[in-house]
Image 1: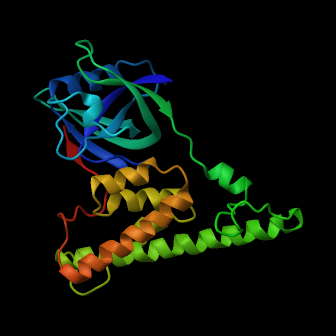
Image 2: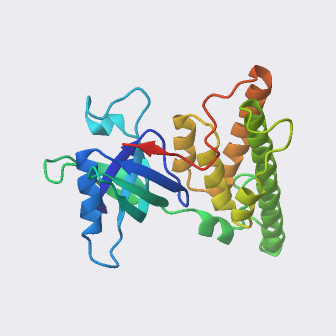
Length: 264
């Protein structure tokens, strides 16, 4: 269990996603200064947690206003501003669960006791990720374990390819409706190439880039298994594509699919 500073935002942050922030509120200026004063080699990071829709952290107990699963933001660059604020660039790091909140006057920003959430990739790989390939409760014959594992890996490849194709279609549909492209397919090759061969990174890219609700994104952040995260994203992308094609409108302005951006 560790204690980390918190930075509540309107949307979750995902591992590996770039998050630029304009820091102007005094307590978060203090947070940045505190991080910069850490010794060389120390982890300069803070926790990003999403605020529940319709809640204000200042008006209720913070524990009621915040989701309980968040992600650390690792400080990459800091640009001091003439007014005393900062422009910073961070990258999503590790997922955590809030255990308890620490509220005080010094430091003035929220802190939290957290437990770190492990990914299930190693366990899935060791077990051959047999979910859906055998009858529930039935052990796999040792003679067939290699075959089941090979089929499981193949099914993951099919899932990754399917989500990538759906994401490309989704980006094109949104870009067309917002005038970003004119009847042409939007170019997502660079985005998809950046996560090529990494299903976990693909799942985090889709979760952060698609115009989903905070609740949907939070569900994806809380999911520890890449396969289940991708399966959920496949369902969500199909739902969103149906809405785009039926209603002919997008739920929010397109942000170039670069991940969440916010000011405090």
